[in-house]
Picture 1: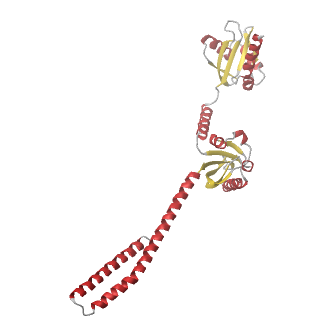
Picture 2: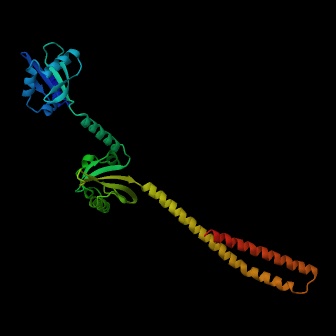
Length: 322
C-alpha cells in the first residue's frame, strides 16, 4: 500500500512538473514516448507521433542527443523541427534497459528575443523596486498593471486591482480627479504633472494628504495612444513642511509689521513732548539768565536734541526693514 501511494505521488509530481518531461522506452532499434507531462505537451502539442518517429530514425539528431546525454551525464543540444533544444536524459531506474526520463528546454530564441526578455525583466525589476506607485491603465481606464509599491501601500493583491477602474476602487471625489486628469492626457497626447487628492481602495479619502502624479500616454508605432502610464508619489510630508515654512514666514512678517508699528507710534508719541521741551529750552535761552541757569538750559537743549536723534534713528531703521 505504501509503495502504491509513493508511486501515485511520483506520477502526480511528474505530470505537474513545470519543466517539459517525457519517459522514453526502447522500441526495437528506436525509442518511443511512453508518457509525457503537461509542460511537454504544451511545448510540442499533445501529438507526439512526429517526435516518436524521429526518435526511431538511426540518424536522428534527437536520438543521438539522448545517447550522448546518457553517456556524458550532461545536457546536450539538439535541433528538431527548426527549433533548438537543450536535452537532458537519465535512466529512470539507473540501469541499462530502463525507461529514460528526458527533459527538454527550448533554447531556440534569437539573441534579439533573448535580449528583449532580459530587458523586460530588468524593467520589471526597476518598476517593482520603485518607492512610488507605478501603473498602467487601458483606454477605458481599467488597470492593466501595478507595481509592488502599489499593492504594498494599499495591502491589496494586484489581482484585485487589474481590470478595475478608479471609480471601482476610490472614493468619488478622488476618482473623479483621477479620471479627469487621465482624460486630459489621452485627449491632448501630452504628458502632465499634477497634484491629486489622496484616496485609498479601502474607501478612505484623506483631504490632508496629496499625490503628485506624472501621467503620460503610451503610444504605438503609428503614434496612437493605446494606454496611459503614471507614476504617483505621496507628497504629504513635503506639503506639510512647506505649509509649516509658509506659516512661519507669515508669522515673522506679522511680527515685523507689529515692530514697525510700535516704533512708528512710539516715535510720534515721543516727538510731541520733545518738541515742547526743545521749544521751551529755546525760549529760556532768549531770557536774561545767570551763568548757572544758562548752563542748565543748554544741558536741557542738548539732551532733547540727542533724544530726538535717537527717535529719528529708530524711524530710519523701521523704514529700512520694510
